[in-house]
Length: 199
Image (cartoon, rainbow, N blue to C red; front, side, top):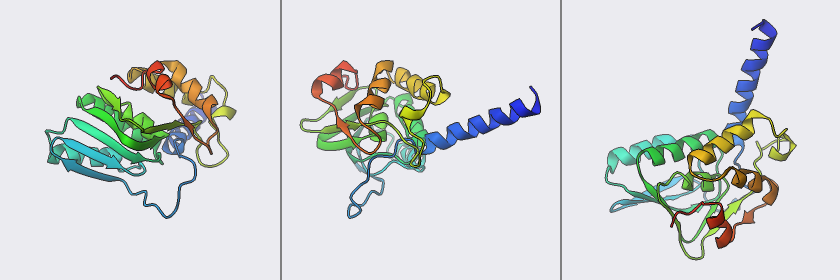
């Protein structure tokens, strides 16, 4: 590999990391509401709310060390993620530990929050909960829909969904469902059709 090719490869890799660090940003949130990531434990269940950020994997690891009997994480109000790489790693950690996930009744889980939910071995959604998706954006001018379908960033998402047991078509549907600055709420039929919930 010549110097020019090597530099291009490094730049491409760094670009991919940067994209993953911000591509699940949800639409503008109400600034009066705290988006701090909060995790509370009650018996064998952890309740998670807030924006998913770079501390997610560390927080989940600390959670399991402090409460090794946790067998379910309930997502209460998760408006999105500002670090998609951490979100995917968090979902993979949840799956590896054999933990189930649930969206609380009347809970709201959007964007990257949906990806974290998919980490559960068994996944359920409470009555009246909102599950929202949209095309990702890196928070600037980079939009999922403006990137060539052969770009490796798409493969990163597709491979993640396949590992979570979700069909590839869900990823492409999410890109068409709503632009990055809006949210599309999935119907119960769509939730089961795309295999987001397992029960």
